[in-house]
Each structure stands twice: as C-alpha cells, then as structure tokens.
Length: 97
Image 1 (cartoon, rainbow, N blue to C red):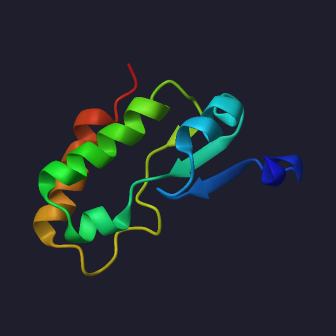
Image 2: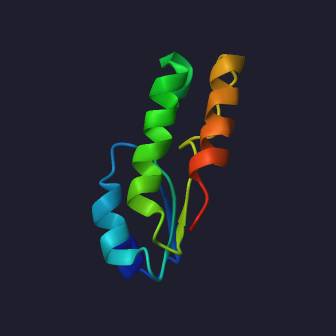
Image 3: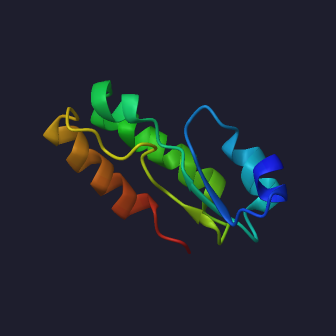
C-alpha cells in the first residue's frame, strides 16, 4: 500500500508477499509481477513447480495487472528439467480465460 501511495504503477513481489491481498487491493489498476519462488525452481520437482505456478495463477488470473514471473528471474543453477517444467506450466496455466 505504501509503495502505491507514493505513486508507483507497479511492483515485483516474491513468494513471501501476500499475493492475494496485494491483488485484491491493487490488481485491477496496478501492475503486480512475480510470486513464483525461485527455490522451488531450483530444488523442487516438476510437480512442485506446476503447483507453484498454479497457486499464483489461481490468485492472479482475474486481475488485469497481474503478470506471472519467477521472482528474481530464473537463476543459472535451475536444472534444465525444472526450467522446462516452469515454461510448460506457464503455457498451460497462464492463459486468461
């Protein structure tokens, strides 16, 4: 709330932020990017990655200002299988209907 009160048009958040609360308050008029935990991308299974993307999309799908992103980008040490799982999950679940 404080950042938007300063006049920012958007923020990037990570998995520790309350995505549902932020989007409920600002998702219809501000840009909110992120929320996929890069630790899950690095150390999780493809199923964990799918669940992380699904969690974010279930919260943000209806908000025009929400953009799914791995907070902090995709680090160099993400296993290739997990990078593919992330892209596949985004492709499957990231569609606004």
